[in-house]
Length: 75
Ligand SMILES: [Zn+2]
Image: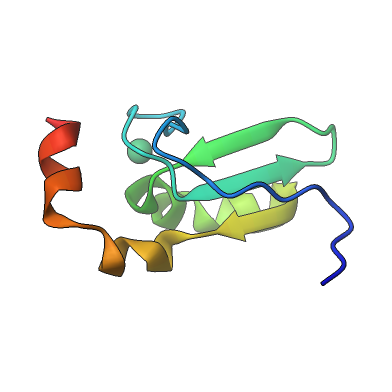
């Protein structure tokens, strides 16, 4: 499956730029800079992101399958 940008799966080491929670959304800007957001902040900045980003990798749907222990890990 060809992609124009190098897509890497988000992992537990990817953290939201705003709050430090695990990131589920990676937004790539025109400049090539990357912003990481948790599901909460991705939703909050959704409109701005869609205007500023050339690519948005959204893995927030994976939240539904996150093991219960992952939440404890955040605290
Ligand atoms: Zn956040």
